[in-house]
Image 1 (cartoon, rainbow, N blue to C red):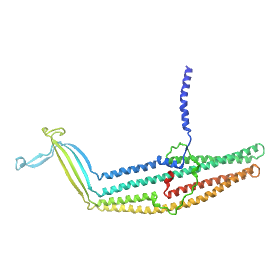
Image 2: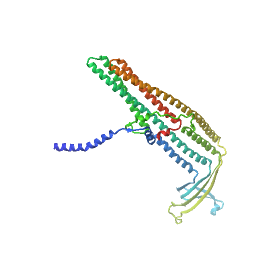
Image 3: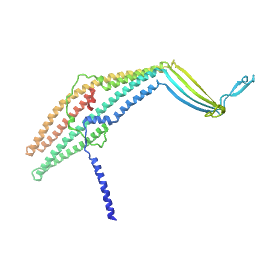
Image 4: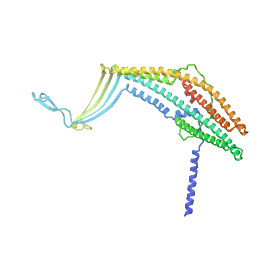
Length: 455
C-alpha cells in the first residue's frame, strides 16, 4: 500500500515539475532593452493621459452631432388612455334640448378616451443653434490641439525620467568599479597584515571605507529601482517588468540654436488661440438671446371615445374613432429679460479678454523658456568638457596613487583621498551630462519639436 502511494506521489511530482520549470523560466526572462524612442511610443500607446486625450477628441464628434441635432426636425410619437369615472357636468340652456327657459346640467365627453399621434417640430431660425454649430467644430479642434499638448507633456515627462534612470545607473557603475578596486587593495593590506607587514589600523580603515562604499551602493541601487519604477509608471508598463537602457542614449549631440523661434507654432499657444475662439462663440451664443426665434410644428392624432375602453371597439359598441391634425408657426420675440442677457454677454466678454491676456503672457513665457534653455545648453557643454577632463585626471591620480601605495611611496590617507576625489569627479561628470540632457529636452520643447523624440 505504501509503495503504491509513493509511486503516485512520484508521478504527480513528475507532472508538476515541467509546469514549475516553465513558470520559473517566465519569471527569469531577460530584461527588455528600452531606448528613449521605444519608451516614448510605449507611453503614448499605454498611458492613461494619452488615451483619455484621444477619447476627448472622439467625444467632440458626438458633441457636434448633439448640436447639429437641434437644427434637424424633432419627431415624436405619443399615446394615451384616459378613464373618467365622473364626467364634468356643464350648465347648458334648455333651448338646446327643447325646454326653453330652463338650464340643464349635461355631461360632456365620454367615460373612455384614447389618443395616439405623431408630432413634428422644426426650428426655422434660431441664432443660438447656428452659433452652437460653429462652436462645436471649434471644440473639436480644441480637443485635437489639447491631445497634442497632452502627448508632448507625456513625452517630456518620460524623457526626463528616462535620463534620471540612466544617470543613476551610471553612478552605480562607478561605485561598483570603485568597490572592486578598493576590495583588491583591502585584500592586499590584509595579506600584508597577516604576514606582519601592515598595521591593523590600516586594515581597519580600508574595511570602514569598503563598508561606506557598500552603503552608498545599496542606497544607489534603491534609488535606481525607484527611478525605474517611476519610469515604468510614466510609460504605463507593469512595475515588475525588467528593463535595460542602451549606452548610446547619453550621447551628447550638438543642437541648432535659433535666435528667436516662432512661438506661435507651440501647442500651448495654439491651444489658447482655440480657447479664445471658443470664448468668442460663447459671447455670440449669449448675444443670440436678443434675436427672435421661429419654428414650425405639426401633428397628426387619432382619437377614440366611448362608454367602454375604445381599443379594438367599433361604432356598434358606441365607440367612435376620428382623426385630426394641426400645423402651427411659433414666433418668440424677446423684449425685456431684466438685463440678464446683457450681464451674461458682459461676463463672456470678460472671459475673452482674460484669454487674450493669457496669450500675451504665454508668448512671453515661451520666449523666456527658449532663451533659458539656450543658456543652459551652452553652460552644460562647457561644464561637461571641464568635468570630463577633471574625471580623466582624477582617474590618473587614483591609478598613480594605487601604484605608489603598493610600492610604499604613498600613504593610505593619500589613497583614500584620491579614491573619494575620483568618485566625486565621476559623479560630477555624470551629473553634468544629465543637466545637458534635461536642458536639451527643454530646448526641443521650446522649439515645439518634442514629437521628434518619438520618431
